[in-house]
Image (cartoon, rainbow, N blue to C red):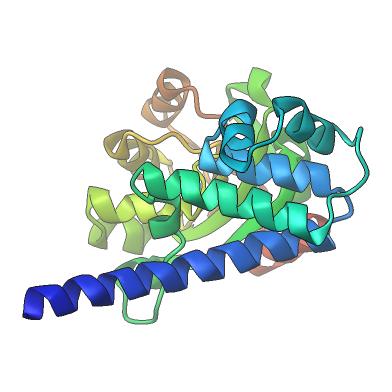
Length: 250
C-alpha cells in the first residue's frame, strides 16, 4: 500500500514540476522581445531537434524554423502552449531529465548553500559579451568566444569543492550545461577545473574570481583538453560583477 502511495506522491510531484516549468517557459516566450530566439533557446536546453518538436505537435519542421528565425509573426498563446507542451512531453518520454533539473533548490540543501546565484537567460549570450560584462579576460579556448551561453551560476568554490559529491556538482548547472560557471574565492583555478572534469559535463564557460587569481598550468590544460573556455575576472567585488551581468542579460 505504501508503495502505491509513494508512486502517487512522486507522480504528483512530477506533475507540479512540469506545470511550473511550462509556466516559466510560456511566460518567457510571451514577454520576450524576440519570441523566436526564446523558443530556440528552450529547444536547445531540451536538446530537441526542430523535426522532433514539429512531429510532436503535428506541424511541419519549417513552421518551427520560421518562428525561430522571425519569418512568421510571433506565435499566439495556443501555439506557444503547443510548443511548450511538446518540449515537456518529449523530455518526459526521455526520462524527464530537464524536468528533474528544474526542481527547486532549498535552504539547508548543500547544493543550495554552495550557489550564490543562478539565472537563466531569455536568449543566447555570446561568450565574448558575457566576459566583457563581468570584467573578465579569456585565457583558454579564445576561439570559442562567439559561442552562446544560456545562463550562469555563481558558486562558492570552497563549499562546492569540499562538500559536494560529483553527482551533486552536476546540479550546479541548473537547466543547461550551456552556461557560465563563475567560481569565487579562487587562487589557481585547479580545483574547479578538476571538479568539472570529474562530472563529465562541460559548461559553456568557466570564470574564475578571487584576489589575484593566477590560473596554473593544470587548470589551463584541463580547460583546453575539455574544450571549455576559461576566463579570469578582474572585478574586485562579486556583487558588483553580478549586478553588471543582471543589468545586461537578465
